[in-house]
Length: 179
Image (cartoon, rainbow, N blue to C red):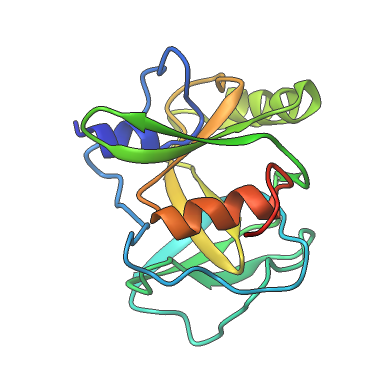
């Protein structure tokens, strides 16, 4: 099991819970351009209904309405995700770039107690069911992985982003200002 697969679940950080799978496909492309949008981005956690190879026929520059299903491409454009309505949306958070050995730069996004409660409730009823959660920002799926634990850690880990994309996530979540 790779470090990338472990961090893809994005529900683990400090103490890295046992999450990840050899079935997990990386959806990040560290060479993708930094998304450009003037809208305030929201990090959405959405259940994955289905995936297919290739980019989706529709494209978005901002995250879709949280209450409706959506079809979105991965950052690399190599996977199209059919997603259910969001489980939780994160409008503002502390996002901190960090280095992990073997996986390079990651962004750690701290969750509020309310966000953590919602995710833990969802995970408790869906873990080991084959359900995957996708993290959506800027109209793209940043990460997606199966729920393999009934509880989330108090932070999300975004792996495989370029330095520019990491900065854009920080700005969008209000952790820093644009340069």
